[in-house]
Image: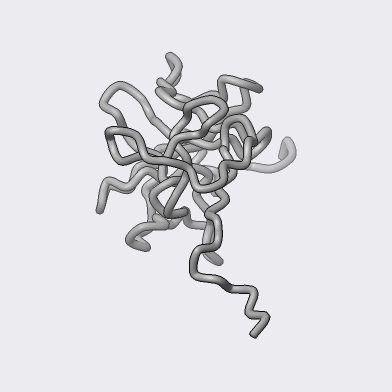
Length: 140
C-alpha cells in the first residue's frame, strides 16, 4: 500500500506577514500557532483568519486588495477612511447595521447594492453622491 495520505502528514502553514512556511507550528500560551520566523499569529480557519476585527479604536486584520498587506490596529483618518499602512491605498470598509459585521471591500450585487457577507443584508451607504439621478449630464 503506497498510500500517500498518511495520517501524520506535516501541517504546513504559510505566514501571511513574512511568507515563511511553518511545518507543524507549535501553539503559544494563548493557543495560537505562531510563525517560527517572525512570531506573527498564523491563519488557521480561513473565515476567522481573514475577518477584520474591530478592536475598539481601529480595525485589526484588514487586508489591502491592492498590495495584499494585512493591516493591524488600522485607525480611520480624519475623514473616517481606512488607508493601507504600506501603500496608502484607501480600503473601503462598511459596517452592517443589521449584524455589525465589518465588510472590507464589500461586493455589489446585481442591483448595485453593497451586501453584507455575513448576513446578506444590504449595507446602507452614507455616500454624498447618492443623488446622482438628479445630476444633469452635460451642460444643458
